[in-house]
Figure (cartoon, rainbow, N blue to C red):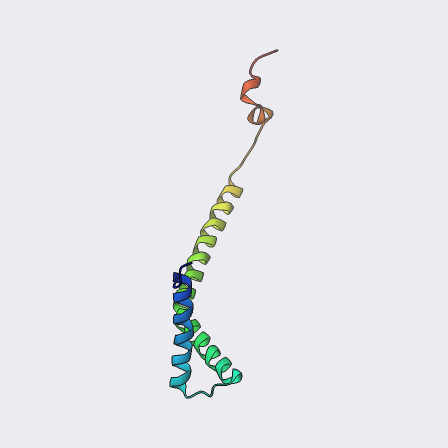
Length: 95
């Protein structure tokens, strides 16, 4: 058994980080105060990730818009299909 695996190191670092921020904010060592610190950390992280989130949303919107335009163009093209278009290629000639 490995005593310090990567997951455990990350977990310990997260706990230490929360404890450090909690101490810097001057919080009391109660569950309510720790919950406030966790909410503060979550809100701060989400605020810092907003530009990335907006950029990803814009990229997806542009990609969706391009796909919609392509579908509209394909729908506007006249398509007349006959039985031969659907006939299997190995069914060539009389049997």
